[in-house]
Each structure stands twice: as C-alpha cells, then as structure tokens.
Image (tube, rainbow, N blue to C red; front, side, top):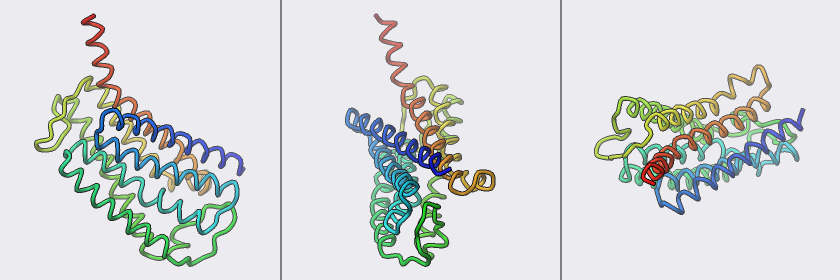
Length: 248
C-alpha cells in the first residue's frame, strides 16, 4: 500500500512545517533562544520527512537517503534537545550546547557526504543504515538520536515533577516563572510521550512492516510533540488573558 505510506510521510512533513512556523513566529516575537533551536530542529525534521515522502513516491536514491539520514536520523533530535537544555539549565549551558551542535552538524554533513555506500540504493523500500553505511554514520545516528531523546524525555518528566511539587523547573540559578503549572506539567508529559513514540518504530515493525511502522511513528510522534508544545507554551498566555479579563 505505497499510497498510504506516501500520505503518512506527507502528513508528517506538513505537521513539521506547521510546527516549525509556530516556533519561528514565537522566536521572532520574543527572541527566546530555545525557540530558535527548536525551529532549527523542526526544519531538519521537515527536510527528513520530505525526503521520505519524495522517495516513497519516486524511489530512493543515494542523494535522497543521505539527506534523510542526516536530517532525520542524526541532527533533528539533538537540536530539539538543545531547547530542553536552554529551558532547564539556562543560556550559558544552552549556548555551549548550541556551539557543540554547530560543530556536530558540520562534522555529520561531511561524514554523510563522503561516506561510501556498502549496498545499492533503489526502489521505494526504506533502506537500512546498517546495510548502506559503515560505522561512522551509524555511530553519529545512535549517539545523536539516543542520547538526545533521553535528554528530552528525562528533562520533560523531571520538569513536570518539579512543577507539580510547586518548584521551579530549572537547574541551579536559572529561575523560571511558571503560570498554570498543571497545564505546563501536562504539556511536558505529552512531549515526553511524543519523543517515545518517535523511538517506537522498531517495536511496530514486526506488526506493520518496517516502512509502515516508520511512517506511522513519524507522523504520530511529531503530532504528539506539537500538541505537547501547544499545551505547554500557551500556559503563560492563558494566565495573562485570565488576569486581564479579571482586571477588566
């Protein structure tokens, strides 16, 4: 059912683009650094999903798989995790992580461009990184996605736990004012769930098939992340509107 896979990949691309525009708009209005790195991550996510969409419809090529692997498997989750670092640890550590990520992005791009292919790439079936690439691209993907997903999940759950206990969801001397803490906690939990869904393609592969499982988790995960972002990020706005309404 290739048409279903194409629709799922197209849906993931559309949600990622909408998500990126939302965070970019917020960064333009408020200039908060975590929203900038989120925007970078979601643009990368949209590029990776678009490469999947194109290749599901037209067939994979070495170029499209390199783009998909670089943007979707290596870089997008680390940039998303950088937003968590900014929120929890403050701008000093966030800026350090951003500098490391810029270096990682350059290194990963060079590795993916130069990496020789160990197997031919053709057809509409999703190639496997362990079959196509050697050690370095796979190490970058494992470390980048695995460690970064752990940072997002642990950070979101820890932040939700702190908020529900009436404490500031931040480390050290990084004060954060929290309005509507229950709503923020729910948003953080939803973000953690979305990250876990994005990591669940291997679990579903046996039931849905490798390509279908990846497309389903891609669309579902980015949609759940978007919902969590909207819930968490609008908590302050709703509180301000409530105060203005009461004052009026």
